[in-house]
Amino acid sequence: MRRLSIPEDVTGLELDKAVRQELQSLPKTLADDVAKNLVMVARLLDEDAPRAYEHAKVALRLASRVGAVREAAGFAAYHTEKYQEALAEFRTARRMSGRPDLWPVMADCERGMGRPERALAMAGEPEVQRLDKAGQVEMRLVAAGARRDLGQPDAAVVTLQSPELASTAVHPWTARLRYAYADALLEVGREEDAREWFAKAVEADHEGLTDASDRLAELDGIEFTDALDPDSEEIEGDAADEVEEDAEAAAEVSGADFTDEDDPAVDDDEEEDEDGDEPRA
Image (cartoon, rainbow, N blue to C red; front, side):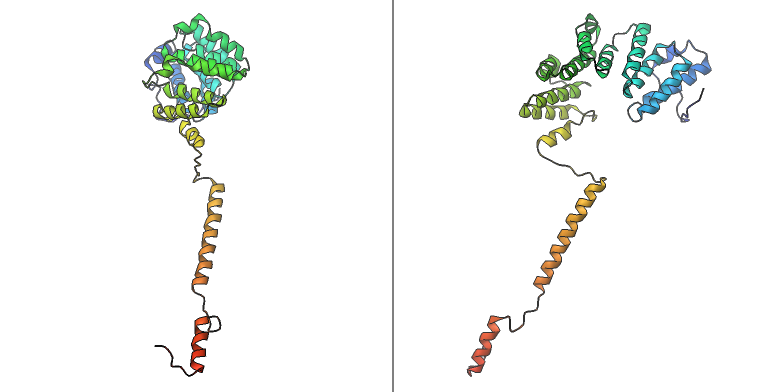
């Protein structure tokens, strides 16, 4: 089996205590290898999902009977849009652990596989009542997304309306909930309300989880220029050239040399001289 490169600073001790306890059922050397690959999955999941998926597959081959490994493999597949594979891993992990918290992401896998009606059915299952507040909010987000998948944007707006949305308290899920509500409002044509909720999402999004600030600026008609965009540099260069050309033209006009022929005042003076009048001091 091909081994993947792992930085020397990765020890495996970075994992949660509960995960490390699950790995204690393995021989120590094997447990260390699995732990290091799981750490790499967590590190790479958001910035390089394909590489995270490779590390998850290694861990899965080494320890397929560990629930935490199946869960990590599920999230790695989910982030690479392998929804059928992700759902299978999540189901296995849920059977092994008995925990309900994977229910919302399992429903979202159904959406990813083009089955929003299945996701809605899962949102109505008793299993949802076993979720903590964060899990219930996540389930609400998935259900609203399923409504929009089905072409029911008004129903999506209603689905997101909840005590959690109305609360002024800020939780880890607050920004995403407010953002989803703003986006749903925008789809049904309620632009002013959408702007208000994008602004509220910005207030709660301390970690930059959404692009609410960009969406708000877009509604306000503000355009940002990417300093690293070569196209924007070309536009700026053209504008600078135009300014330079205008400056040169202005300089030519201000420095022009008028001859006596062009100056009517000189003509008048010359005529007076010819009549014998003394020139004016």
